Length: 221
Ligand code: SAH
Image 1 (cartoon, rainbow, N blue to C red):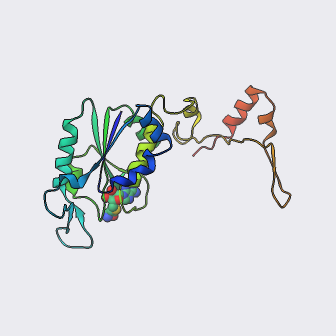
Image 2: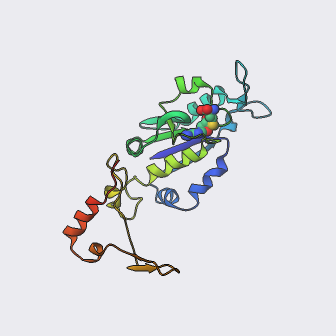
Image 3: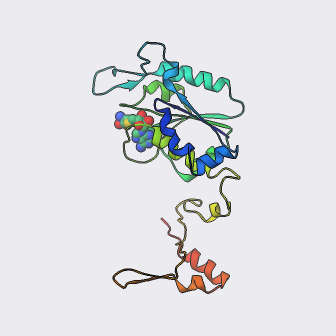
């Protein structure tokens, strides 16, 4: 799968390409990840990607022209199914099911907004989906684009060490969260002498009982 990012802060993506799961997916050739600098599609000396809003008001708005040109160029080099996603505080809520659907396409292009947002005509005419990662406002679409990329990359076959872990994970089934997990030691004692114990059933070796306990202890919405 290919993920293309359109951004004015290309270096920020080193946060996910240097180490971790996305870096691993790239190294293994499972994810082809390309970051494009939106300013490469500007043609004025200032390489401006934004301008004042029509009708007045605070802040700047990202222009449609550079985004239109960039999408045209990026798409012309792609084969297979492609979706264009605009990061936006106004978008549909990003959920595990959306991540899972996006793993089925060949190419995903993610546009990172900034300032007061993006000229509405981008959303009206150039994108397939407008996605919010939560009901709060961030200063740019880069962190949302990284969140989306990470959530997709770990679902691609061959990325996770043990793909079984995807089955029981939180949100795999809507509204169902993973059971509690514990590891060594069996008893952890705080400096105040409080003993924090692992539920004894998990030490029993009885897999039927353990599975039943896990099923019972999944959180549900
Ligand atoms: N004025 C806008 C917010 C702009 S924030 C509004 O009130 O809706 C600038 C950019 O950050 C947005 O264009 C978008 O790309 C990104 N962004 C901010 N919050 C986001 C969120 N919750 N999810 C996804 N992208 C977000």
